[in-house]
Length: 164
Image (cartoon, rainbow, N blue to C red):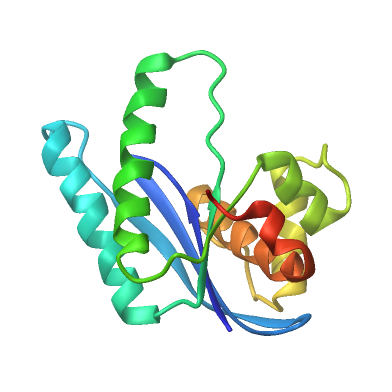
């Protein structure tokens, strides 16, 4: 099984691809899709859409997991990230309807066993569980790998996390 994890973003969208079965997963690739701040919003959204389509074409994931969006203050940023998430969802659903979503707390719980873990703890556990030589960088890519790993560990209950 191939799982694509996505940490949505307009300036930087993180992705992580893992492959394996049951509890034996390995890292395939990780990285980011970035868009320049000075570029008009429609062009940035097109870049995100095309980038995610390319990921779908290259890795042909069986399932795709997104980190759920969470905004506490800046509504303008939240709307831009939501738009990027929307075009990423569109790019994914053109190839598969196996889309899932996890909250930051669910990701922390799945990866470290503690829902209040900090980013460094999550990154260290991802590195350990996937036998990586170093922590994925930048943080957006590391977060996306954690999302993919969370989904891999949620296979028995995955229907609870399906995007509807």
